[in-house]
Every structure is written in C-alpha cells, then in structure tokens.
Amino acid sequence: GGMTSHAAVVARGMGKCAIVGCTALEISHEQRQMRIGEVMIAEGDWLTLDGGTGRVFAGDLPTQPSEVMRVISGQQPASEAPIYQGFATLMGWSDGYRRLKVRANADTPRDARVARNFGAEGIGLCRTEHMFFEGDRITAMREMIVARDEGGRRRALEKLLPMQRADFEGIFQAMDGCPVTIRLLDPPLHEFLPHGGEESSLLAASLNLSRQELARVVSALRETNPMLGHRGCRLGIVYPEITEMQARAIFEAAVRAQRRGIEVRPEIMVPLVSDVTELRHQRAIIERAADQVMGVMGDTIPYLIGTMIELPRAALTADELATEADFFSFGTNDLTQTTFGLSRDDAGRFLPQYVDGGIYEDDPFQVLDRKGVGKLVKWAVRDGRDVKPGLKVGICGEHGGEPRSVAFCHEAGLDYVSCSPFRVPVARLAAAHAALAESAGDR
Image 1 (cartoon, one colour):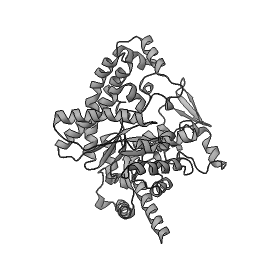
Image 2: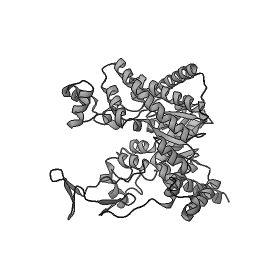
Image 3: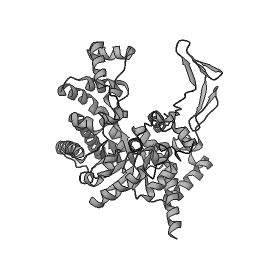
C-alpha cells in the first residue's frame, strides 16, 4: 500500500510515522539485517524516517516536536511561542469564515484530547475494534471469536464490556458537549487471531484448546476477499450479542459521564450497510439496549443512530436508508475501493504509474474522485434529505483532511468533515478557503 493504506492511516491517527510499501528493502531474517541498494543496515542501527515524504535517512538525526505540538501537549506556554500564536490567529480567522464543522477520527481518550486541542468539534469516527488489540483485551476478544456457541461468546463479551465502557467514558469526558460518532465493530474476525508461531501456542493454552483445534478455527474464518466478507453489520446480524454488548457499553458510559456533569452526545454508526433491512435489524438491537440501560439506571440520554455509507448500493438506496437513519457518514476510503474496484492496500504497486502516466489525474485514495465517488455522495445527500430534510451528513474517510476533498464536501452540502487528529488544522483552513471561494463566486 501507499500513504492511504490501512497501515498508514492507523499510524497517522496515532501520531506515528509510517512508511509502507518499501519494495526496495531486502530483508535477511537469518543475518538480522537488511539491504537498501548498496546500503546495509544491521539490527540495532539507527534510522530516521520522514513520514511526509517517505524518505529514510541512515543514522540518528536530531528531531523535536514542532512548537505548535509543544504548546498543545503542555510542554511550552503559549505566551512564549510566537509560531503557535500565529497558528492560533490563523485558525481563528478560518473558524470565522468556514461553514463546515470539523471533527476528528479518534479511538482512545488520548486521541480525543489531542483532537480537541487541535480544534476538533467532535468525533466523526471512533473505530471500536482498535480498542481490542492490547493486553487482556485481545485475549478476551479471541475467546469470543473461538467460542463454540452463543453462551461462550456472551461470557467473553462480558469481559470486554467494562473495557469498552471505560474507554467510551474517557472519550465522552474529552469531548464534553461535542458529538461522538461511534462505529460498531467492523473488521473481519480473523484479523484478531494469530496465524502460527509461539503466539498461537500461547493462545491455544490460554483458551484450553489444542493447536489443531485453534488452527481449524483460524482456517474456518479465513476468507478469499475479507474486505467484502463477514465484517461490518454482517457480524452484528449473525452475532447480535456483539451489537448488544457494544450498545450497552456506550449507554452505560454515557450515563456515568452524564452523572459527573459531562454533556454526552453519542451517535452510533452501523457500518457496511447495503440494504435498509440490515440497518433496521441493528437499530432495533441498539434501541432495545438503550431502553434497558436507561430503564435500570434511571437516566435519559439523547442519541442518534446512523449508518456509514461505504458501498455504492448504499449510496444508490439512500432514500430507503434515510427512513431508518438519523445521519449518514461517508466512509470514502471503502467507498473509493468499491467504486473503483481497487484495494488501497495493494494498489500502491501500480497507482503511481497511473498518476505519473496521466491515466488518473490524482490518486483517488488521496484526493476524492468527483466524477464517480463524488457523484454517489451527491446522490445520497440529495435522496436522503428528500426523505428526511434535517438529515445530518458528514465524511469520515481520510479525504476529510485533504483540501480539495474538503472543498468538494462544502460544495456538496455536507455538515462536517472528519479526519485524523493531526490533520484537523488543515481541514479547518480548507473549509474556510471553500467558503471564501463560494462567496467570491457569488459576487
């Protein structure tokens, strides 16, 4: 993949540098070294990475956080930071002109705080699967996946519920008074399982399974095309107890946060919907969980239930989806994949040649394709609001932080864009440019 591959997107959201698709590397596991052209790098040698350009430097080059980051992270007072003061002034001007709201894609309380400090006005995408990958969480998640029946899955989900609840409560606290869009579990289940080696042995032992039994489970979950397989709302339909647990965690966290004086505005998003019956099925489970939690805890929490539009059929049947959805959020990473028939994790092998050769004007995973993907977005916005005029509409793909794509979202009448926390200032500025260009055109 390239700079918009899944690995790069996840790393960017964490504020980490990632350079992926390095085909020039020749790695020797036996000698514990790698070759890049004529340069040999041994294990333990220093490298310095520039994640913006993809350049790799031999050696330990001196680095430091930018002045803006030092102020935002509390390492330097704003009064002693002239660059930050200029940044804050520019952002203030931008906010005075833009119409589009700017949210952030954030999966943890820490990410939410960073986003808020950068001026995010809410969370447009909280990817709940990212909460399951660490420590005891991954073990409980794996226990749920390999369970032989619903009872086993529910026992594992009861272990996961307090973990998710604590994360959601922290996110609500960081986003006090702002909307938080939480996407239900989305990726294929096999992504959580090890595929051999010592980790498989340890997992089999912890779950009281033989290596052969675990291998059979992993093999049964393997899919030829997992991107279009058993993921998204399809998981919640086959295993409704997953949706039930996540909804309980969200509403229990919301009630706890509200009792501490925090204003909570949860928006629950059902992913990978292609038919209104899928959304109706999942909405019923979520509403039932909400009624149960609020009935027991005695508090009332306002909430929205919507869907992520990332399949062409969803965009083309937006009028039907709007009967069950309180909001739409366009997942343009997947919508671009499914519209073009391209995999963003594999297309980096040939997309540069397409762009350099003039076949594509831009990489469609970096700059939103107006002619195809953009037309689907506009159709869905129009048809959805014909049915429900007050329908809230946003975008949560990586395009939400790219200036030309933000301009398109303004023109298409979206309410907000959402992007990685560290791209929020770019989106705020781009939204102001779009509003100014529109007013200049009107004159």
